[in-house]
Image (cartoon, rainbow, N blue to C red):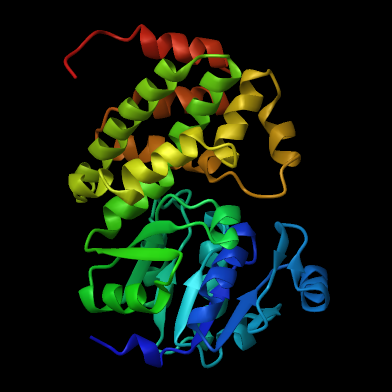
Length: 335
């Protein structure tokens, strides 16, 4: 295995809450961490105050974290390039990065989502744009604030290249941040993306004052949907029983820091989707992922009733109460 201790230079592309939290938790593992942030005024403030006051207020950036606004200078000399941008920005950003990347760089995606239209997973987008087959993905039950705070966190790094997965595992793991390896990027990415769709449904249950029974049923049946799609796409069912599947699903469906759950809560209160989105500083990936997941389910002939009801609620005007009613009144069947 490659000597991960020799990897000293990390570039993180995306300065939202998750990218900033990763910069904070990974800073002790590297001599230099450069964090690309889209907003130039925010970069200036972060350099002066050492705080991301928009996306992760209350946390000081370690001294070796350098906020940047230029993609080229961010990745120059980097040994690991970690993409943490929203899924709809992945392709244009990787296209911008492409001329500045070298074959020796280790490419890692921490974006949880699917590309609209192409229905590609993020590692597929990276490979297509960069012509770089050695790509790893990280995912798992991770709220940014808790990671930045130093709460013990476990997640998965997956790649079809086992050496790359082990290298990233060794480079990133530390006292509060533990990575397990997987050979199933399909399962890890599908689990990380589609759990956001189910979490919107969990928020609806909470917003309609439904109890733990309802949420437990939704999580369990949601996991069944994610598993069916993963298997149809060539992934492994055991992945969905792990951190990137069940672990992330439970967190996102029950945690108060979940943006997708919050969207469901607000919809259940009767707020319009457009107003909810406009009031949010950060992206709730489940909103866009719902459309891509419905399209994937159609492509692979997979039954995904929860996803279909969330799509009808988000885009076809179906009320949250009616969406839940239709799920409960479907034809009866064996589990």
